[in-house]
Image (cartoon, rainbow, N blue to C red; front, side, top):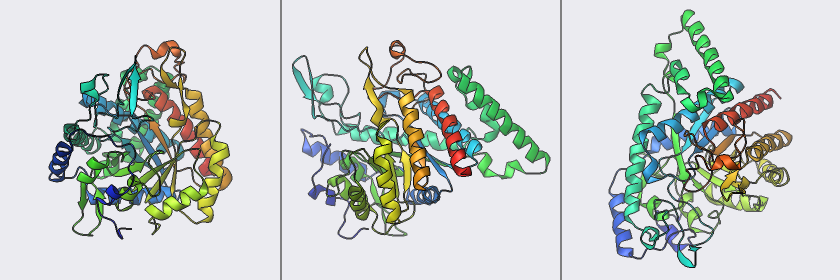
Length: 451
């Protein structure tokens, strides 16, 4: 994998979606500063995730990946992080209990600060400024000062990621995730909703199961799986200056690892086989994700996998389809069939969010819950027809009480969007909508496993 590769070999390739910094010396100084600090994650953690993903690829587990579309420096308080974490816990419990299937929990969190843009420039009332590329690059405010790329934001991204990771580890291992506390995971605004009621009923059944096992002599106090969870982090490896600065070589194995997250992914705009982003990720030993849009062809995927996973390492690659409702049944089967015939064991994951973004009548960027459900159902149906494993789901969601996606059991409308639309970028599912999808997915997963 690492032949003719170095952490900076990507700089000899065409790099798309990177900002232009007015002060190159300041950027280099920020990179040197980051390179001297500890990695945010460690080799053993990335290896553990790869082992879990290998089980997903074999059909023995399921991947749940969720979190914010683009994290904000101003909105990463303890409550925000905890609320998102507990909704992911709830979704995982629903999937695990409903389908009797282990769930790998992977957050889009603690590093999702960079966003790709369709244009380098945004124009408002005749004024053109650099596009907002996420808090790691510049500010969202439409002013020249805010939109100028600032290398010090890389330092802030590291600091925020470290703080969030510290909290996530405490939540995952410190008792918050204890199954005996499952009744306490529901947020107040979800509790009285139909999904909250369904989850409370499920939590009651779990509590009864635990009580029964303990009455039979099962020592729950000595079973760590009941008191803590494994939780991993991921983000798009878009800002290569930042990512390279956090690459570290494991002394024991001699392998290189990206130190910013357990899993890093290639976006639809950055998966060119000869591009800088593919060159960078191919040399890392982390698991990697690849977004697969409706224009991808079987030959595209074969060439890309030959580049990033020539040794066919189990659990190395997660392919994240993002086709759009109505397009997936026509586009995905040929890709799945091609890789099956080539004996490529990858994790197939569905992102039903990015292909279903529309504009509302009152000008908000939104997504229709019905379209999201349609793409998820089609994803499971395609894999059932092709004899492959529908391995995971990838959502943009939050634990906050937002109104950004239309529909669902809450019946959110265009008028509802104005009430609590807080996303700095793309619309997210709220806690109730996320749970609603989890219950639907659990039913599909259960039916598939029975079949």
